[in-house]
Every structure is written in C-alpha cells, then in structure tokens.
Image (cartoon, rainbow over all chains, first blue to last red; front, side, top):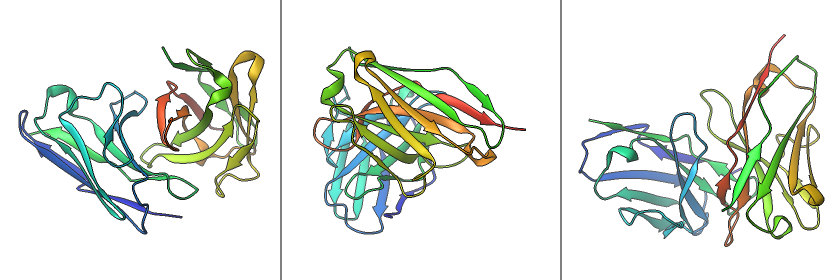
Length: 107
Length: 119
C-alpha cells in the first residue's frame, strides 16, 4: 500500500498570505493525485485532480503541482473560508490512500 | 445538480451488521462508479471499496475484504455498503462518493453517515 505523508501537520498563515502544503508518496503515483478540502462536520470537497487540474468551481487561487512522489498545493492569497483541513489522495494504485491531513489555521 | 444523499446515523452493538445507503440524483447513475470512504475519529480517511454502478462489479480494499459488501440498485439509483462483524474500531463517518470523470478521485460526496459501535 502506498503511504502518503503530508507536511506540515498544522500551518498557521495570515489572511491574504500564501500557503504551501506538501504531500509525499512512498512510491511514484505519476500524476494520479487529488487534493481535498474538509471543513468541520462536512464531507471533503475536491479541489485538484491529476496533480494540477482544478475541479469545477474551484477558485484560481488554488493550484497544484508535482508528479511522481512530491506534490504541492498552493493557495495564493488566503481567504477566511480557506481555513480548513487539506488532504492529498493517490489513485495510482489500489487501495487508494490519503495523507493524514494538514490543518490550515489562522495566524 | 449532482447529489448523493445517505441514510441516517446508526448505533450498533459489537458483532452486528450495518447497511448504509447512498441515493444518487442529478446524473445517470449507471455511468459512474460509486466509492465508499470512512473517517474514524482522529484517523485519516480510508478508502474501503467501490462499485461500478453500470455492471455491478465491486472491489474492496484488502483491509475490508470479506467484511464489507457493496451493492447497488439501479432502479433506485442507490448504492449500499454493508459492514459485518462490527467492532468498536468501526465507529466512524462513512461517506459515499462519485468517481471523477478522468480518474479514481471523488468529485461529489455524500454528507456522511455516522456509525457508532458500542455495547
């Protein structure tokens, strides 16, 4: 099973600033990587698939990059509604697996 | 609009079974695969399995193989996930999700169903 490791566990950023979240795979997942946002009490929301393609309706301030084993989610200018937990997920190999999450909190 | 609506919260005793439903609307049910993902308290999300809503083919994560059964009823546009031999560690929120158009990510999610296993 591919292990996904996210860093940092918690990221404190001020509104308007840039946030950079990292995700590492224990073996190559090519570009078969998705990012999700989850707010308390809600289901995850798809942000990015294919490592860099924004899902329908996702603002342009969200961008994804990387391939193979190293991936990054960047939020260019944080809005109040962006403070949440973010998960990466690989879908290259079954069983599909998630990272443990990065909590993005207001500084 | 695409919607996945799940059945309500359940409380079960250890050793019992639970069956969660996921009713789809807003798209052609048989054209997409439905996945099941769970989130136990303090744990990362876990992918449990999926079902091709068209042909009914199902696949399970090795962790859940033999204890989880995923089915669907095309006439009701509904998928089901049953977990047997419940134990306390199965206490979690269970989500159904629709597979994306371009890969095995989840583009639409159900609201989640809390299953509590307690004696």
